[in-house]
Length: 212
Image 1 (cartoon, rainbow, N blue to C red):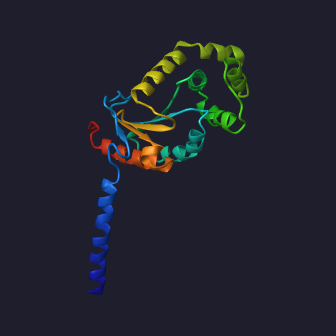
Image 2: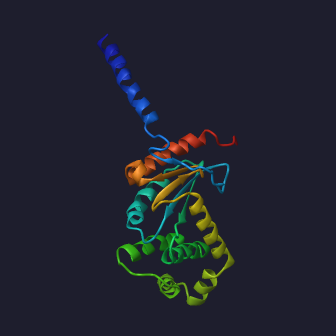
């Protein structure tokens, strides 16, 4: 009888906790609902975008957190990064991101480029400085120049700039879930909070995915 009473007491204590978790993230308080949804790249998955900048110290601190988090995402989540670019250096760094992607070496240069700007405190404000960074990883100048000016890179750059504007980005890092919801650390309470809110919204959107 005592064990039974303890069991029901545990249930009573648990239910409010579950309800609090279910109510814990509210539109307009912990995340913004975008006025116009942005088309995602795969309608059969829940898209998760991190908008970032290599020169942002907050993004540098967030990178190991988001890397560990994305490794545990379910198969129906489609995570990718979009560089922000509201000035010339940021646009140059974004172009470097797409050069690395085009050369199939993003995994190799991603963290070192973060470290170059945030730890080494190097200024990469022109194409020559960016080319010198890529040379550290065996990319010759001719290959870099050809890729830097390629249609594939410039078109991805243009698309990223357009998407970031549609996301109504206020700073970096920020996250967008399924082209509908914008999450910032100020709204979520912290960078860890951003990931919690993103997880909540991923689950919310998963229910509406097309049945396979």
